[in-house]
Image (cartoon, rainbow, N blue to C red; front, side, top):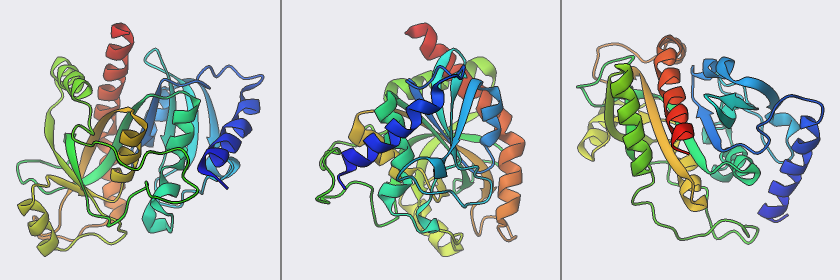
Length: 282
């Protein structure tokens, strides 16, 4: 089946679910992707309608710890949004295209902007656990991507520029909101891996040498697809741990989720501020 047909079936299945509800965001302006431990932002969404991935045709189910695996529609800071509360990962057995299918659905419904978040390990030793990094660029170290010359791909262009994958104007808005709210905001390069194993100290030293400031197991495929679709993108890493070898202690997945959740309110306020700023500008 052609990719356009799969997207059309998914969006057609969603439309009847809005009938009789107060959710207004079935034509969202902004898509949000919430990473590990960051799902609490959903509680701030008004007039929400939540739809599990398993109820969306051609969409796989999220199985990663701390990921609800559903689309949540509603209004946040005066903006109609669709929120991926939990994402899909390639380490769950998904192809890169399958990991971004919810984003394709969100775009087809009207989202032209993406705010993407993740919990990440800090490679830059000037960062600290609990702080936030504005992603200014990325390194895809997964050895794969969501866009191919597949004969079923009749939607996505196969050659596109990624010089400014993270939209400069949105990065400027993030800086202004952070300054206005007193939020410490680092900036840097995010490196994405397939996972699910954490990195070795030798790998972290190598990643630092090629310019990475934070590392995780998501985000890069979503941003590649957003670039292909011509979406505006803003991205944040909540630094939930120091990367392997920096501290003399093991990395534990559950502790990462706890650390991300503990600092999630700061990131939530930052995202709400960006949405509010964009609404006023519009």
